[in-house]
Length: 116
Image (cartoon, rainbow, N blue to C red):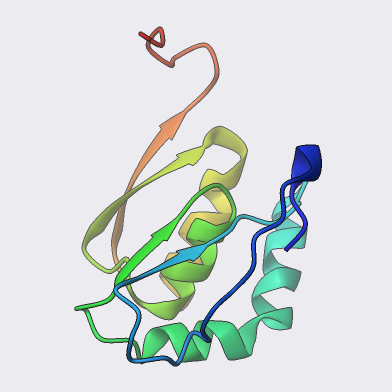
C-alpha cells in the first residue's frame, strides 16, 4: 500500500491467516457518507472475512476504516471514536448490521490540546 510521504506498507499475510495477532484496517479516502456506503459494497469480501475472525485477533482501524470494522460486527458493544462528519455513516452501518456501537464524536474544536 502506497502511503503519503513515500512510505509503503507491505502485507506479509492475508486476512485469513491464523498466524496474525492483529490486523490494522486502514482508512480510505472519503468526503461524503455516500463514499463510505460505496466502499462497504466494494469491500464486502473484506468485511465478510473480518467478520469470521476470532476475537483473539485484535482488529484496529482509524478514520473511515472504522466503518469496515463496524460492518464486520466486531464493534458490537464496543466504543469507537470517529470524526464529526463520519458519525452519520457509522450510525447507518451499525443500524444495518443490527449492532450497537458506542460512538464518541469529536470536532477539531473539541479536541483536547495535544501534549508532547
